[in-house]
Image 1 (cartoon, rainbow, N blue to C red):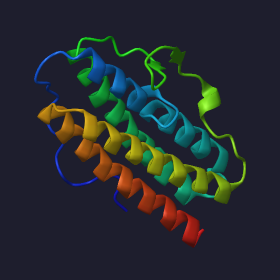
Image 2: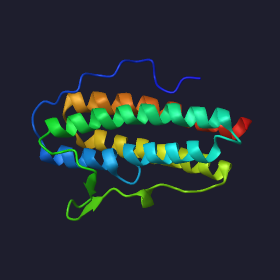
Image 3: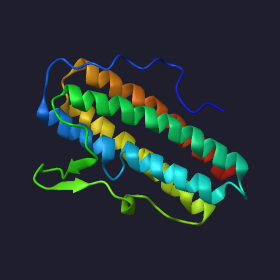
Image 4: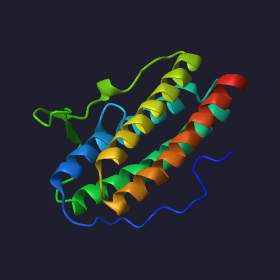
Amino acid sequence: MKYASSNTYPEVKVERENIFYAHLLLNDYTGYHGELTAITQYVFQNFNFYLKYPEAAHILSRIAIVEMHHLELLGKTIKLLGVDPVFQFQDTTFKYPFYWNSSFIKNSRDFKSSLKDDIFAECQAIKNYRKHLAIIEDKYIKNLLMRIIEDEKMHIKCFEYLLNTL
């Protein structure tokens, strides 16, 4: 099973510093449906399900590793845009900062409910990336977000596979 697209990731670059773009990406980085949330949710699920569903636990850990790579790419991009990549994001009006915390992850102990939560979260992440693609005019960031979306679509397929076979 593949956990990431076979297409290469673009080089981490930006056309110029842009604080507004950095704050948009902080939502993808550590927001409710951001990469840090996905990583911690999949690691939690891996620990929770590894005894009963070892195949699923393996898949969850591999997807978490891909999400870690996304976190790294976004963090470096945010830094190039002129903002420190702290585990904080701002609401959509950019008025109130929120620090990432573990309340963002779903702690369901039910296997199927967890997979449904994962599919929903990946769909929300894709929706957020697409929203940011429509706003951001930097070609390098656009290429990065489009490449990350490819992986997120693959993650949905993995979760659907698990939901339908286990």
